[in-house]
Length: 149
Image (cartoon, rainbow, N blue to C red; front, side):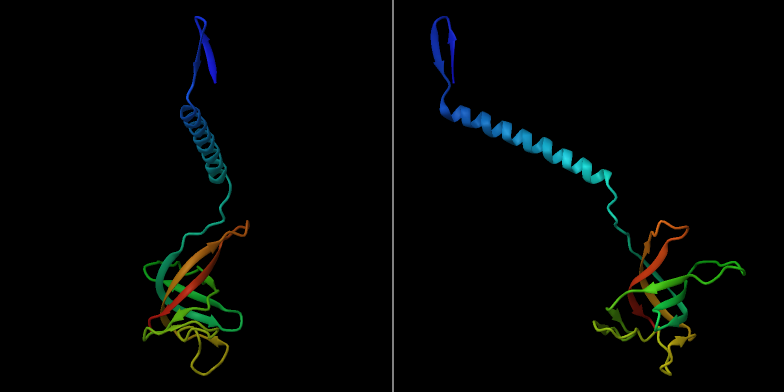
């Protein structure tokens, strides 16, 4: 690059040209990155925050993998129905602390007699997310079960 000042030609050294090119490229990358970040913030991420609940399993169906669960500290009105949770986990922990990574049903949810429906009250800790189905209610899903009894 050259310029004329009072009839003289000034030559810009090559390292300075490279520095300018690198600086412009870095600024362009920064602007593009910030634009992408803003677009990412604007769209729905479909993420869920997990909540750990401790309470009592009052009803469980192994075939449908649905349970009724009463979290500790939640005061229910007499006419409130059971809150039903869907159990979608292959990893669970029994009361002794052993982690099971197979397709077996958690022992604190199953009946001791091998029947599909259990009304035995067992203590458990659930890690729960809520699935927004664009309906009137969100569907609570237990993604982790830890048996306490």
